[in-house]
Length: 536
Image 1 (cartoon, one colour):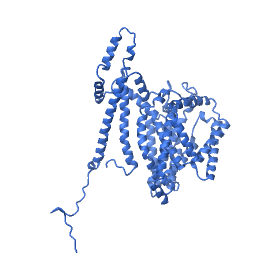
Image 2 (cartoon, helix red, strand yellow):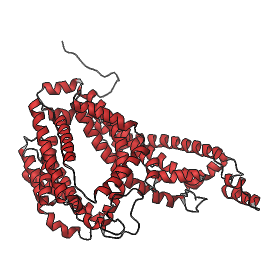
Image 3 (tube, one colour):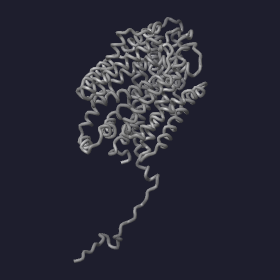
Image 4 (cartoon, helix red, strand yellow):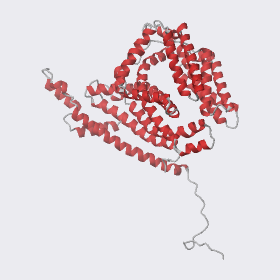
């Protein structure tokens, strides 16, 4: 018997309606709505936070404190002038809205202590903090994630126990104590060592043994593999240290063609092993070719480096990435993208070696400058007063001043990122889909890098952006110890002077960065986890 399908609505067409293709604006409307909603709610939070900070400062600070105990004959006149200058006869709530109105007009105020505008004070403090914090953040995150992953993959081994112990020790150390020790050993001790840079034979043996134990624990494997790794690392480290000690290489360092070739090949093998696997011959040959091209360009690049600046370096970096992609594409194969990615990453690493080699070439002259006087590692300030030179001299000077405060920040942040990454990686490696991937016969590299690593980064997506925003508020203790004029130093000086406008300007910058970071976290979640959509 035939079955007739009728519409519930009389006269309605039962045929399916054609799908309506949405335009680009209609497709992006949910995303824009989400962004607008988050920005609006974040601005309301920022508004409330600035109000609270302004009220707390207004009721706790006393701008008239120095005048109340003054013996000047016209003290009352001075008090009246300051009250009129700072509007202290106006209730704090009204003063807050006066400040807010000025901010909305683009005026962040003026320091009543120095007469300098807050915008110019922030303009000089922010670049200083960026130069101090940026390298520390990148290195701390990179090293912390790398060591945390290795510790998770080597769970309950000696390396894992050592990393866990070291992380807890570093996490509990006060930053001022670390900074003082670095000043004592990293600056004063190293500068004294440069007078006669000879390494004693027992120190060579000790450092070589430590290197052998470390690399054997990282590589792991069977007992025979660990002993081979230990012996190879011990011999290599002992040979390098003996060469440095006997040739005074540290007084006139250089990588040279041999050093760049060896390190470039090591970068090529490491990149291919992580991204494509050494079985992918085309990707390996593309990466090694890229490293060889970098070695061949060492001498021609010296002419380009003459009179260089950061714009030139960035252009060369872009050219290196493009060259690596081209080399990977020329090697072809069924998956050109893998070869292009491996060659581009190798090009960046080899380019960094060429940059470091060029910096090393000016070490001899920098160390003998009258302002340096054979003591290159600085303990205070961002630059050496009176030192003049080209781009490479000034870059080396900035590096020697950044070295100790950067290491201080790295040691503190590194411990936290290591613990977070290890815990996240262990949780992911015990998931069902990881066991399924292994049961399907996928190589361990693919399981770790493509399946586990990406999902292990999801918890870090919450921490890293907020840490970045918080760090730009200034590493107050580190900046004070190393006499670094950044955001933290600006905050402390303004707080001691009872100067409200710079403090509010500082808080406004940090609050805005935290708002932006909280929004970016949602997009990072969506990029790492395909189950999350910000426009849902």
